[in-house]
Amino acid sequence: MPDYDPRQELLDSVVRRIGDLNEQSLLQLSQYISYLKWQEELWHSLLDDTEADDDGLRIVWKFDLLDAFPEARKEATREPDLMEVKVGVASSGMIQQLALWQHPPVVGSAVVEYEIHVPVGIDRLRMQFAIGIRDGALMVGDNLCAFRVYVNGMRLWSMTKQSCLWERYQIDLPNLSGQSVVVQLMTDSLGDNRWNWAAWAEPQLLGYAAE
Image (cartoon, rainbow, N blue to C red; front, side, top):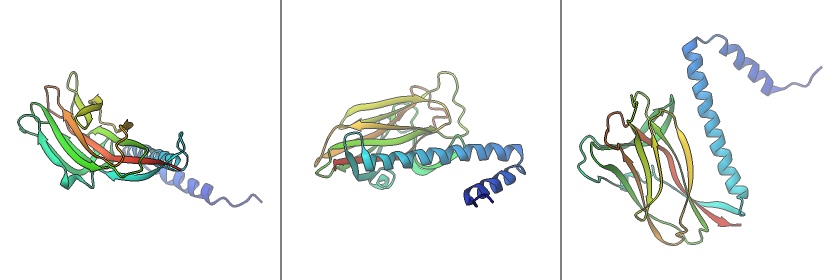
C-alpha cells in the first residue's frame, strides 16, 4: 500500500472542485494563482536576501512607505487639478493589493515625499515596489503614465506604463547609513492624464548589514 500523502489528497480535492467552475470563475482562479505565485516569489526573495545575500548581507531594517503615508508630503509640481493621492486597495490584472494611488494632475507630476532617517550600520540600501495601472483604465495609443523615484533630488529610476498588470522592481539606493534621506514617488501623465490610474504596491526601503 502506498504511503499516505496529505498534499496529494488536498491537490486531488482542489482539482475536483475546479472541475465544477464556470469559465469566468476559472479565469479569476487563474489570476489569483498568479497573484499567489507572485507573493510566494516575493517572500522567498526576501528570505534569500535575509539568509544569504550575494555579498554576505542580511536585511536588518525595513521602512514601509504605505505605513508612513499619513506623515508624507503630497503635492503637485504645478496645479493639482484632477490629482488623486491616497492609500487604498488597488486591483491591477484582477490582483488586489494595498497600494498608494497616485493619479497625476492634468499638467505636471503628482509627488509623495518622505523624509526618512536611515539607521547607523546599514551597508546597503535598496527599495522594492510594484507598479500598476488599476483595472478599468482605458489607456491606449500614446497615453502612457510615467513612474519615477527620486532620492535627495536625483532621479534614480523611471518607467512608463499603460498596462493593467503589476510589475515588481528592486533598485539600489545610495549608501546613506546614519543620514536622513528624502524619497519622492512621482507619477506624470506625459500630457494626457485620462485613465492614468497609477498605483504603487508594497513600496519599502530595505537596509542590509554584514553578518
